[in-house]
Image (tube, rainbow, N blue to C red; front, side):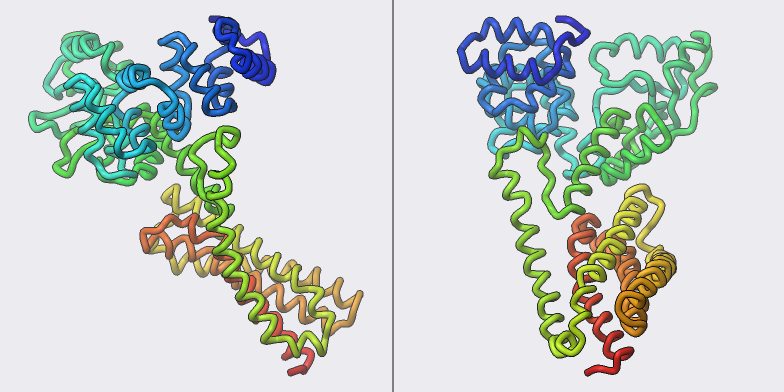
Length: 453
């Protein structure tokens, strides 16, 4: 297979689809030979389910495993269902234990025992060990295939252990250093081992280790790994004994998954867990309809507020013109604050105990933003209509921005305290709440300044 692509993905995709439709499987194999691993991954993501299974069956075994590992867990699950049992068993056996667990989490529960039964006793035990930890935990994403060394070993002995497990270990570049009770004393890099003489004691070159616990949230563990730019971090159990390693590639995969989930929920949809073009239309609909119904129900609050202040609108009809501006500005301000604080929570910059500080800061930000917008909006409105209407708009923008920023800032923290995904309580709900409350503030300010009832 060529390592350098000679045809673009769109052309390859069209050719493969036409060849599969025409039953020219030999030609499909020849076309596949001209594609890179990256191109084949993208092609499989774009092919319909049945054509995807046919194309995948025509890949050489080694290439098939490489491509399969690059697919999202959701797409892997779809592909597994389109393959024969023997093909599925071969793919499943060639995956690393932690990658098997990623896949199992996306498969129907009845299929997992069948796949595990087809593994060798050793691989089944390794996979079962990872499966034993709660979903969403670091233990569920760690690899049990690593190389460790004892603190009282020599460099020569440590290198022998590396060479002995070279083909089966998922990571060899960071070795956890253990005492007699398998407690992590520190870590040593393969680079440092190669620099030292064989007689050097591992204790002389060991470095302090940052460890994560197997029951720790996988996202927080991944941020520790990527934030410190570690190649891998040791994962320990409740007794502080080593049970696995969280590698940098798995940490990045976790963060990509979590960021995609947060982005989707902040936009008012459920995460797809597979590429857009590989997602059936019914799944796209189901990912959005629940949120639309919830937001539609929430929007009735806005309607109720307008009905309460119907008399005010009848007396000063010009007020109705500014409703979209005010609720739009309030929603955008709240969403900005929620997005910023949600990100800060994910990075560990903000903790639930910082609720008061965040409230104070976002209130200040909201007042400043509202003042700037209020001065500009109030002056323009006063020139076009009358000064009193300008004052109404100016003061309302200050109040709405301050309120929206404060609510947007504290809602993600409240959600985290309730052990709910902050993204769920972010933009859609904040927008709905700010719309209704902002209108109340608007009409109350208008009644006070314009002296209407």
